[in-house]
Image 1 (cartoon, helix red, strand yellow):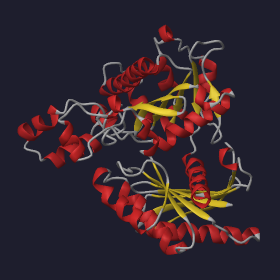
Image 2 (cartoon, helix red, strand yellow):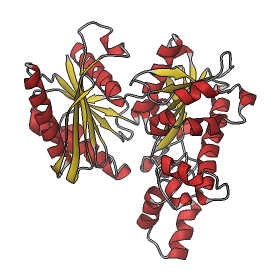
Image 3 (spheres, helix red, strand yellow):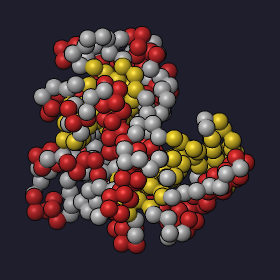
Image 4 (cartoon, helix red, strand yellow):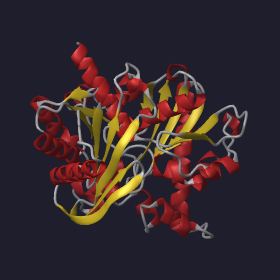
Length: 416
């Protein structure tokens, strides 16, 4: 069975065609067969299109792609042309779509129909930078592939619906919070679930026996406490703005800052929200860039620079959350790094873990330096042998996780 996994961002679209066999445990396989993978980046007048087959790039070009719907059309064209060169027909049996916000309504993956489309559309106000792109990808795929191909929405928030009320509830008027659906939803759930599964496979233990702290560190960053396979707390909240210092987002902030800026700077609430989402984090503090590589370079040999301060704040905030989640879990079996920074920046991993020997975190410098480009779905241990709290780098593969959830959802619906 071939599942097309579509991961739509605000201005991009990544995809993989993943082949599962028909055995009962195929969904649980950590390494299914990936037939094709690619992306449409920088959607607009000069989009970058790329397609790989069996690890080899077969298409790499630029051209106008005006919308996510058009991006789906182009990806299908690339897949069909590549399949013809192989002498095989392209077959897509199901499509899985990543959707960032599922609100209170969607607690697990769901087969897409008109009612689901309308409900996801309505949730756009809670994730205005992300859900519209997902919706465009869904509508584009339905237009190109037709209604006979089953499609599934896989929600980033769904993994966190297991968070208990004491962690999910904000201490505001409860009636008001319930009226407007204000609670900790959490995000990056697909990535955190992927990291947990990859780690469990690496240590050869059931996920249901592990206490994990997973760190998804990229342009967006989040930490999650996972107790025996269930998310019990996470750093992002009602929106993806809360929690860790990120590329352009502030993370944790006294809410009174919003009103203060409105009064003192003459800004609207919407303008302050954009400031906190688009001009804060590493970019706002460093004054240079949201890219960790640029900030690291700018901070070299300049301990009093704004770039150095941005790095200190970034690592301190992650370390602070690790400590709090150790308290939440009563200790942990492993700390797992993922995401663009988590996977590819040994210097940042080392700085985060510096001085944490008190809780059993001790990195092996050689292993840490070597863990930079892992195969998707793979993990590498970076802590010293015998460290009380093991540390791993996991190469998150969201598309495989989306495909796995899609296949499971379809099978469950057929058997019910």
